[in-house]
Image (cartoon, helix red, strand yellow):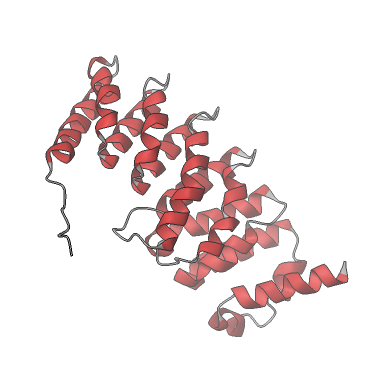
Length: 238
C-alpha cells in the first residue's frame, strides 16, 4: 500500500547517515525502488562507505525478501564487527533475530557470526549485554543442532565470544559432533566461557581421533583449569 511504502521510505531516511544522503541525493528512494541486483549493490556501497554508521541501514536491509540482499547486509555487519558492539541499542537486536532462524544457509551462517560479534563479552553488564544474552544465546544454542556444519561451528564460536555460562550444557551436548571442525569450535567456546561444567566434555576429546581436536582439547584443558583456579573477585560489604 501507499501508506506502507511511505513508512518504509521514512525508515530509510532515518537509517541512512546524513553524509551518505548528501553524497547520493537519490537515496533513499533509489534503494526502495531498486531491483534485486541494485539493492545488493546498495548494500555493498553502504558497507564500504558508511563505516560504523552502516549498522542501522544494514539491519533495515535484513527485512528484504531477497536472500542475496540479506546476505549482503549481513556481510556489512560482519565487516564492521569491531564497531558492532558500540551499538548498544536493545531495539536493534530485533532486526537480527529472524535471520538467525531463516532457511537460507548463507544468511543464517552470516547472522550467527554477526550475533557473536555484536554480543561479544566486553566486560560491561548493562541492559544491552543482559538483553543480548537473553535473546541471542537461545537462538545460537538452537543453531548448534542445525544441519549445516558451517552453522554449527559458527554458532559454537559465537557462544564462546559471548561467554554466557548458560550455553555450556548445549555446547557439551555437541562436543562429540561428527565433524572435527565443529568439535574444535566447541572446545574453544568451552575454554572461552571457563565454566567448570565444561571440563568433562573437554576431557573426553583428549582421545579424539583427530589430531587437531586433541590439540584443541589440550589447550581447552589448560585454559579451563586456569579459569577455575583463578581467585574470584570479592566485593566488600557496605
